[in-house]
Image (cartoon, rainbow, N blue to C red; front, side, top):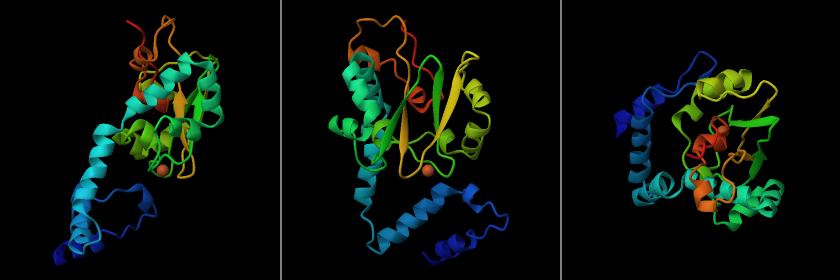
Amino acid sequence: MPHDHHDHDHDHHHDDGHAHAHLPPDPALRVKALESILTARGLVDPAALDAIIDTYENRIGPQNGAKVVARAWADPGFRTALLEDATAVVAGMGFYGRQGEHVTVVANSAGTHNMVVCTLCSCYPWPLLGIPPAWYKSDAYRARAVREPRRVLAEFGVTLPEGTAVRVWDSTAEMRYLVLPERPAGTEGWDEDRLAALVTRDSMIGTGLPTAPA
Ligand code: FE
């Protein structure tokens, strides 16, 4: 593995002052190289890594967040508790762990639309939404979500009424946000499962809206 290690060192030099904003030329290859070194030295167990990746790719995903949103739509008491202490409430539903230690839920209303970004890196509520999409981690989204949220929203196909304020929440390792979208009209009397099917991942990041009932 010595030649891999040499390449690894070489690519560490960034002279433009924006090193944090640049991904290495081939992240997948470099991750693979790192994993090989760590495994060879007995520092990680590849089976444990595979289990973690499988968990977040297949078992944990936006369906968890959708259950939370649907319950908040159906149950006003739950909604109140969720907005007061989301971390405890979602933990009570079994949604906790890595990257989900501190969660705040921000509710959309007729006058306010909420949108989530991590300007520094890619903080995201994994237990509720799974692994973040590539665009969430992109330099463009991280910079523009704050600077021109309405244009970003328009590119996602979201046009808000002129009077609606857009609030952008910057996630950190200490606090991650989940948007509680507004319950779509025409869903009166629907049960939680039916409601949950309308909740899209992007509607919980704030770059989308729930699906309208058919
Ligand atoms: Fe981050």
